[in-house]
Image 1 (cartoon, helix red, strand yellow):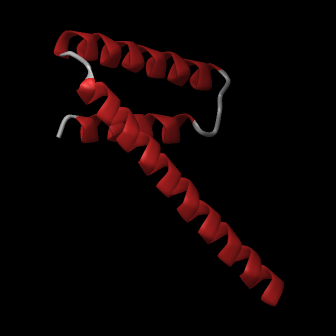
Image 2 (cartoon, helix red, strand yellow):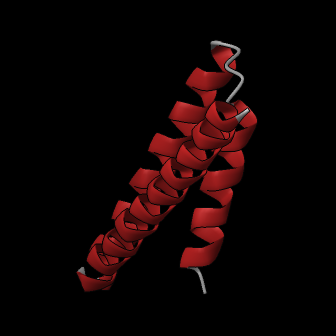
Amino acid sequence: MGSIEQRLEYLEEANDVLRMQNHVLSTAFKALIRALPAETAEVAVESIQLAFEDALAELSYEDSPHTDLFHDVTYAFFREKER
């Protein structure tokens, strides 16, 4: 039983690390977009949104089990950016 508990603890810690890494990358990305001139930032965000839509379409085409998760995370990212 101890082995399962250790494995679960390790997975929880690894998940926390991944979440924090994603938060750091998201924060840096948003700062980069904010540093751009307004017109350039708008074009960049539109391009990124199109790339995300392409990636979502690809996941859907491949019938990936991660399609809904990708969609939800992408939506949350752009919703948070608009704040």
